[in-house]
Image (tube, rainbow, N blue to C red):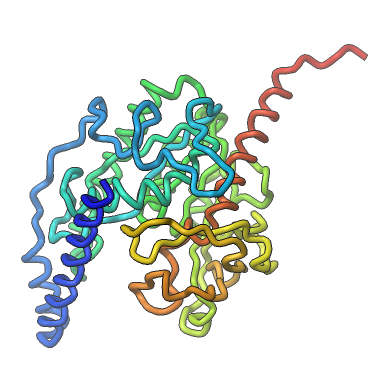
Length: 367
């Protein structure tokens, strides 16, 4: 299995390198012609719609063995069999193809989704929740400039799959159970839209334990749209939204301030109080995602929210964390850098949610 995943990941890296070479080859033809060429190369034909009755349309399900069924923090275990809550998890983008929307079974897509995206991301919830991770026709990562209508259509196709999968989950598996909504990068952005459409101001809000939207941009307009789903500001608060986007302090002067919400994953507060790395119970890393073993590193990095981002002092092993969009861009490591804290917090919030609901059901004793 590891050998197959490694081959698939090499294929992904080869494709990314090919895209980079192509971009370099056409870089000198001018932005308008370059955008037009890029748009002409994109395939607009839609892949088949996923059938969520088919287990193959899910990257992780609690009733079968898959890569999410691991516990990477020493001394912990996969607890899905007895979990009191569910997590609906949306993985980050892997559509490096010249297609507006990728087939869910394309080998470039599944190499990452079925390997590190389940093992090193979704598995953070194996201590609190049954894990449901739907496959969806992801929008292209590299979208041509000036193709706003096509880009929006691709986003809408991907989100339509996400919403259909969530409704299938509700109808067939939820049975009134508490639910965590989680995602990373593009998955976090789809999860934000799902919260607005399915939870905010609706009865389903009462089942929401919390949300983890790593890499999403929750600006002032999004906070208004979230309505009665506030940004979290306490480690055991429920019915709220956690969001952060990690950047290295070496990029501090290169990025303009944003109005994006930020929750510190070491304090779980939405303020600018810095948290030292000693509060970090441990992160994870593999040198090349396909390599073994996955290393667990206590006290990995610190964290401070400011300017709409989560600022991180680069770890001692910074070279182990791939930063494809420049030094200090840790957006693909939002889960990995704080893996143990995130895992523990999800367990704590489920416990707090259950305790709150139990207290609401308990009769008030007569005076």
